[in-house]
Amino acid sequence: MPSQEEKQRRKAIQNELRQNANTEKLAALPMHKETLQSFFDHLDQQLSEHGCDDTLRFAQEYAASHNLAFEPIKQWLGDFGGYCDCEALANVEQEYEGLLP
Image (cartoon, rainbow, N blue to C red):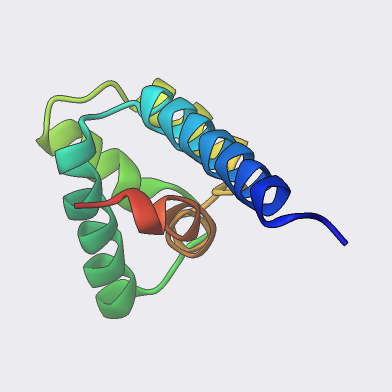
């Protein structure tokens, strides 16, 4: 059985790894962190009104209306399994949930 000191050391390592992973996720964002919640809110609203058509049209709309380049957003969403608007909301938002303001 590990000592209390060893348990604390392991917990510190886990916290550092988690923090490093979060820092990397934030660095990979194709938009400002403060914009991210607005992006997901837009997807949520549009999907509840219109449903998903298996494209990223609402993500592309958001990018255009906020003067953001769409291709980096599309790549970033795809990296987390967001190949259409509903997958972007389900998969990518979940990935960033604890990091949003």
